[in-house]
Length: 78
Image (tube, rainbow, N blue to C red; front, side):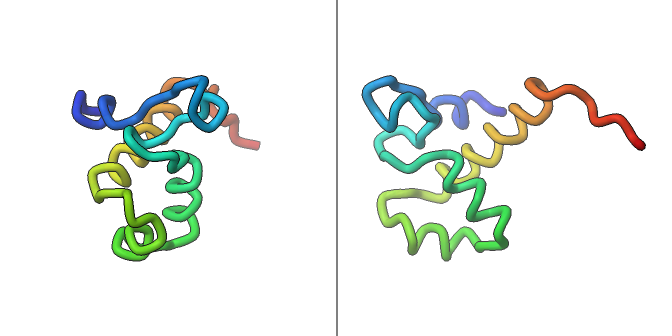
């Protein structure tokens, strides 16, 4: 995750109960990740959230990737 991406993701207890959002919006990172996981294109996400910019989508994706790398244990094969 780049410094530019980090600067775009914030957690503020006064905004959306402290959930990660894109700076300057009330758009949850989780909502963006859900949209990407459901196959929405960046243009469709931007149409859904007019205050969002493409950099916010990419920062949310980078944030999710960083969490997947750093926060979760390895998945054991069965």
